[in-house]
Length: 338
Image (tube, one colour):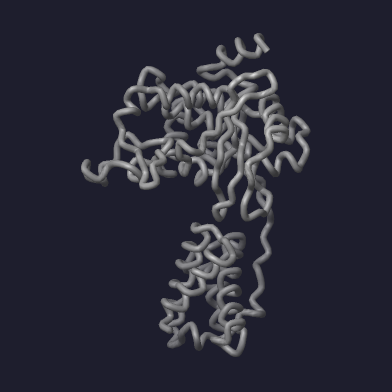
């Protein structure tokens, strides 16, 4: 096997047998390709690399040349250890040169959290008289009100929307999302999210966009322009909004609202969701379910009883319940009727 074939074989095993996320696999591929180049400069190769080669690569070279910090070198060490452990376990190398590689010690930094007031300011920025504004409001409300990871948010399709009725007979929405190695979970959404998504789905401009996928499903959140794609190819999966576009959206509205730059990213919104749950003493098991921290391969659709219980938690503790949104009035009317 060539070096590239060895790398691909290990990464296929990580992806298919261990269920690692595609993003992790892509990061590991980049690490190993850099290792190949590093070893070639030392007249070595993957199959002839010594412990000293690997120690220098994950230590001095990673720090000085790759500009990695102690914290960001940890996944690099994990990658190298994992690759050479796999070679050894499969009889491709009789030794395990990475066995003595140590993980760098690093302090744990506290995550940056978006504030409730920040979320309110950002949510009130989109122009609901335009299609793009309705889309942005629906997307941002989904992000703030459900705590989804970025990959899960942009990966939503129309089939991800699960409508049901609560104990009072009201229409409710839960969102089926796949994140972190295709693990599936169902997250109850606040009323404000449901209202804005329905407004978005009913917008006449959306009906003119071809967002149908090969399996008949439809992309949920679409891009409105992409100059890198020819018009005749701008349909289906190509219409899906990108993570970068969502980041740009958060920054654009956040800057216009005067929000601190360090809080203008999707993960800060996810931290806000988790923080608000903790502030309201939501138990750890429920938080794990809502935020997708449980280490499971598949997650069945919740029973109606469990979904109703989680819905009540979301109604009380989600960030959108504590601020004004473009559709707060509708929620308040329904709450009075209940």
